[in-house]
Image (cartoon, rainbow, N blue to C red; front, side, top):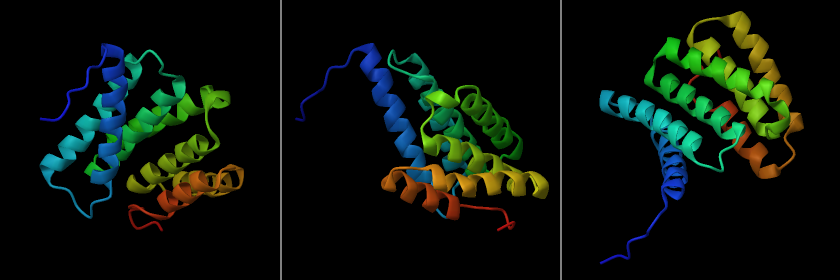
Length: 162
């Protein structure tokens, strides 16, 4: 029988925040999702954010990343209004707290605004934010962060605009 781990409530919040967040990536990379998987990815996004906000070591960047992941979940699920709502929340949180964000967080805020604009067939907003997302590549200092940022920027559904 595997050894059972004991967690404090605070440790459990962090554990589930990370676990749920990481599970989103696996689902988001699938070619297509069933209706049940779409609902699951949305639930995981909201649950991850809730647990981050309950964790004592949480910072505003965890909330920003939570909004991003919820927006990503709604994009993958095809829910335009909710995707845009959470993209805007991510963007607002990012730029109201810019000094507390990593360089890639800024890029991802631009990327999600561009992606949800594309999803909502708003070419003007798409072009504005996509250019900013592309320009942010120059500001990402760590090679590994840049690698994943570029992969995310080049991948996923751009709803026929790219």
